[in-house]
Image (tube, rainbow, N blue to C red; front, side):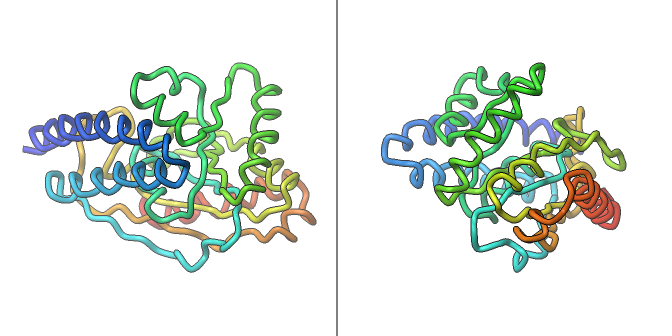
Length: 238
């Protein structure tokens, strides 16, 4: 039964993704705000499908920790779920993601419409330069920048290699860092089509203030991000 529900979810998820991403690309003609609003429908639809087909509920914690100003968002990456859902609970932001995603028909076009910062991971120096240059512009324009510091999805209980690009961007832009933890990989496992019923908890942790970012050393700040995010994920069962 779980297999049948998961297949049904994916069929409807793929169809809705095609429709929403097309709508995002078209709505960009009417401005960034219109494209963002349309993009939020992707996360809303995804969570409705998860709830009524797969029996997966969503719980949100710590929204009071979200800064009122634009910031660098550092989030755990375990599945597609956090990519679709974070736009529902955060002010407008741009993703930092791998260049290859931009080549996917419809999906890549929507990412471009949403001004995603696409980088080539094979060239770390140029990638960092692009993150800083484009990220600072977005932050100055009032949009946050979301970075998955591990660079790729990790399995439940695993910790990837945290990269310092988020710290360096926050320092240059003089903005706070918001930490995000969750246990999405428990219900939406990496590398599996099966969806496990249960509750996905998304937890926003207390931010690292802009002053703390400026006063702290890069490696110390990176270690703080990793320690806090991983501890919260373990607490949530992820």
